Image (cartoon, rainbow, N blue to C red; front, side):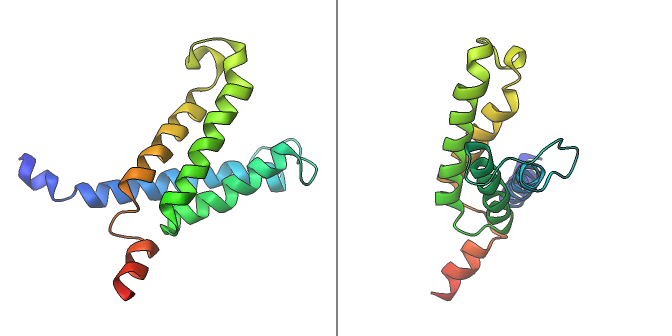
Length: 130
């Protein structure tokens, strides 16, 4: 059974990339536009606004699989910084300091840095053309 499943691994990975990017971009849309249950929008050029821009645009680029490795590197760093700046001061365990999502995104994006975009991506399409 494993050999049959192994051939679908690149496509399952691509679905992970698409869903992670889409869900991540929603956090940016929420911050920037006050949608999806947000209570406020941050003033332009503040740290929270910058995070919203990175999340909305970076998430969309991850979904498209465009510049995946460098974008994932930046987003992984953003989530690590968010974790240590906002969550870690509240306690050691991510489940108790509400930082599990930031930690998970940081490591998922770090994985994308090394794994690339997968077969269904603009990165692959552009690489084939050149």
